[in-house]
Image (tube, rainbow, N blue to C red; front, side, top):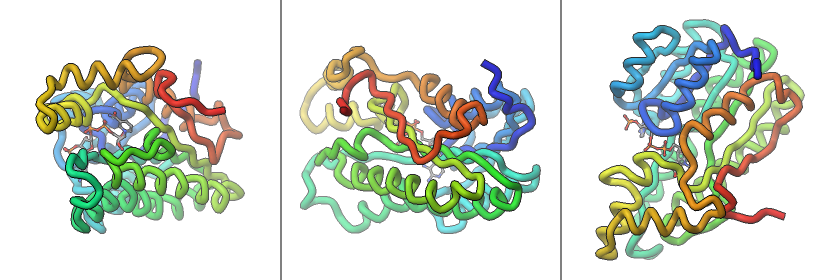
Length: 261
Ligand SMILES: NC(=O)c1ccc[n+]([C@@H]2O[C@H](COP(=O)([O-])OP(=O)(O)OC[C@H]3O[C@@H](n4cnc5c(N)ncnc54)[C@H](OP(=O)(O)O)[C@@H]3O)[C@@H](O)[C@H]2O)c1
């Protein structure tokens, strides 16, 4: 399907690996110039930059100025058409709610919610001025599947989805579409890395991380984790005018893990 994205300019947060890297690669494939933010680059992101069309920016998006710095780098190329709010992180709260400190809550909210608030705030003015744009935010099934093991992450994702829906109402009449994607478990370092959810839950319970991964995969109908590329293809579609009347919507990709009626 021709998405008509050639020549557009995008900002992707959390772009050095995982879902953000797949989104960056996919948008670049569609002819989009992508400004890709992470604290540090990666060999894969460097390779995309070497091919042209992708500009890596080293930035800590948990800082108050980080998201606006990233957006400013993109605005140097021209009007930003697409923002993908992807950055986020999770820390399993093995010892329960009572052990989660203010510092831990604030760190999760800073990266998981405020980085998106700040990037979106930085991009919306220029987008409105340019007459339109598409903002896609990577939320999680935990937005509506509250989980005490990731209690601050779940609450943050609920806020993120809510934020996107509110903004779609305020900015829709000015040509901006905002949508969220809510994945279940995805095969990235967040879940499967050496410090990922499977490794940390495994260490806490004395179980093999592979068994924890298999149990999580077994909860979905398809029996597997989603691939980052499967998220990236939906991001590209939502970024395009092909689905120009889709806004304020949430798209679940979880292999049938959750049931919505
Ligand atoms: N994987 C899943 O199962 C899953 C499920 C549902 C939703 N999600 C959501 O999908 C999004 C991406 O997750 P992922 O699985 O792709 O994670 P990931 O593999 O851990 O990648 C995270 C990316 O964010 C960057 N990052 C982390 N902290 C940063 C900071 N302070 N400033 C700038 N960049 C930062 C990382 O690069 P640096 O470390 O170099 O900064 C990396 O590029 C998150 O919002 C996550 O909540 C993931």
